[in-house]
Length: 156
Image 1 (cartoon, rainbow, N blue to C red):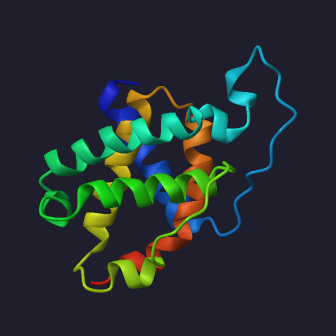
Image 2: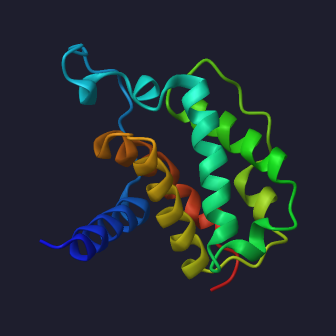
Image 3: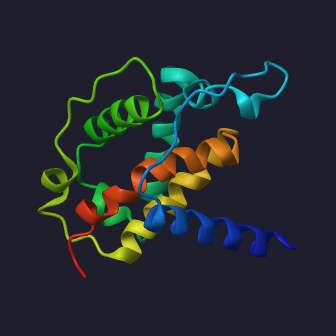
């Protein structure tokens, strides 16, 4: 399988996870220290510092991507990164509290279509790959985020 087919396969899998998952499992799994894929998901992301670093690279990708740039270029990027870091930390079982708006309220005034949403997911996957986050841990995060697409996409 060439790199393009592998990337396309991962993108399709992530989109399917986003669309079809309703009840994710984030329980810690009696980790074995020798196998990093069995560590609790929060730790696989590098804890809060790892999530913060991920958000930095994720925002860079969102600004560089012509499909998502217009949503983020003029926005308060520092605030968005902080809110995403809080949200991801909570989702991944970290010791955080999400202080941001609900997804529907946060995205109500934006014109986000399915293509823009899918581009954001792709950029997130690339950022997670850059940080060496295991594919299984990525999918656990994406599975929790999946139901939110109904509140984020504001344009058919």
